[in-house]
Length: 225
Image 1 (tube, rainbow, N blue to C red):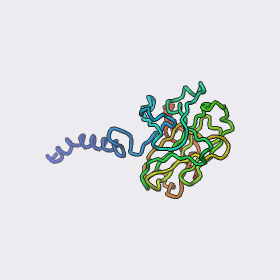
Image 2: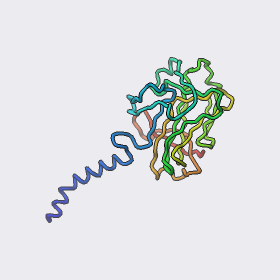
Image 3: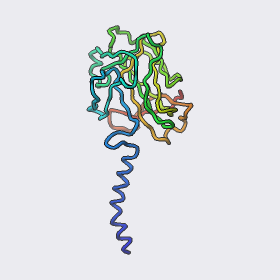
Image 4: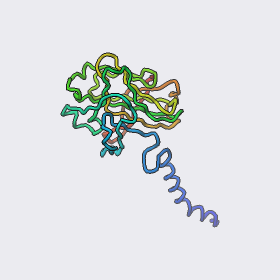
């Protein structure tokens, strides 16, 4: 074996270690999640600081800087109170405004998954989740209709068209819209090639593909918005 081959073999473990480290850090901000990874605890009072969910390690922030309307409430249903911290508070949008939006920071041309979680929890004392109905819009376009939002999750994948993306709750005259959690997740450019600037996708079904943990964070999405 030549001296060059000996040196190359000696450096191989170092090269593999450096490559592995590089692959692990692609798309990540130093010391944190990927850029654009955002988790909003809706209805959390502005004087409360960010916090980390002990089960997932995800950092949640108050929603004050992302929305300029609505009211803060806390759920009162005892069963609902056992859910995670981000679901304990609600931002509701009384009928004074037809369209109320969260403005989410994005990078034009990048793909994102947006997730909204609804846990009614009798936050308003009316016990009327079964008759509630309101729409969601992604930008100016209709996304879906939220019905009986006692424990619902809605997701969509889209390509950002600007440096911000409005996700809006639309009052349709069937009760007050509300939301507990808004999450934004950046996606790789090669994923979901059918998602383009003029065509998004919404979640049809969630399924586990061999995952052994009970907490599933991936989804299967194939319905066009």
